[in-house]
Image 1 (cartoon, rainbow over the protein chains, first blue to last red):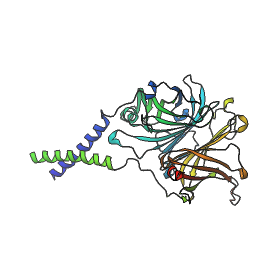
Image 2: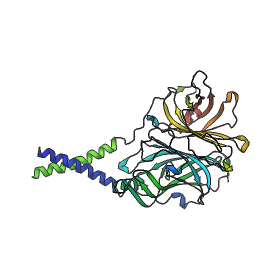
Image 3: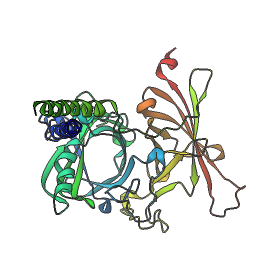
Image 4: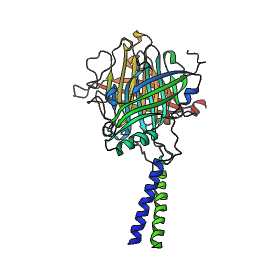
Length: 229
Length: 194
């Protein structure tokens, strides 16, 4: 009997060690600097709020920390869309002016691998910028750093919250440099093929209510030789 | 005592390997899949129809100045720059009436500059389609267009997308507006080049 207890204790310790190693994994790189920041391309920066109540609309399965908004919006409770969330946001320029509307579809990815520090999400932005045109941005995003740096500490905190200054790029694909893919459709973006990166800036997160002060930035790098310009 | 310690160490190693193997082989995300209703065409392409029941599947209808915004409480931007622009969000169903994804439809009326109608159909377990349709409807209020880009299983496909509004007069429910059918005919780039 004492050997069995010893074995079970060992199993629990081993599994806990692995989880600790995953949490403190030094080989999972934080990507604070966007590869687009060092390019010669013209950058279009679109900011939006990650706080559901600051969006035009946010919906998910209704059981996550982030609550759907407005109150009476339909929830995505059907099995095929349960791991999907949709944000409709006003997009603002770096000066804070509303320059467009974006609809973001995001679904948990089956390619997620905790052992490699990957909590992947497949996302697509459908964007309309009045007077400029429409475009689509396809991305693979990795939320591992956000989970480890913000969400887990917030859950461990006695105040059920996290405060700090956190900035990180979340885009990891599908392009070779770990950037997102931009396909322009109308207006000045017609025929555009470019790259994009999305980053998150967080200062306050609640384990009970989700993001309290958190915003995202979508940076689109337009090649300077693009004839559309 | 040594035996106990050795058992403990063995347990630790087994726990490490076992937990590692579990995380490696058991997917942390397992998306729900329903069988696709695809009709294979003689040219090697395939055809599929997605449906939206109105008004039940409409998640959002954003229009400047619209009195009855969907959902209630939606604060749609009313700046003049957004005049003539509408955005809608729907749940998408397959032929069996099962919800399999979500879709957005953006429209700008032709009278207010460059008109367009665009769809993004996001099917989590399959991929995403981005289609551009003609701004003005043709016969029977149908719009035709093309798939511009796809991801997942639609990545290397091209083809046509047709939006048809079907009024349903058979239903006694007075709130029933009908349905939108998205008829998609796609072919793989490899088949197309043959």
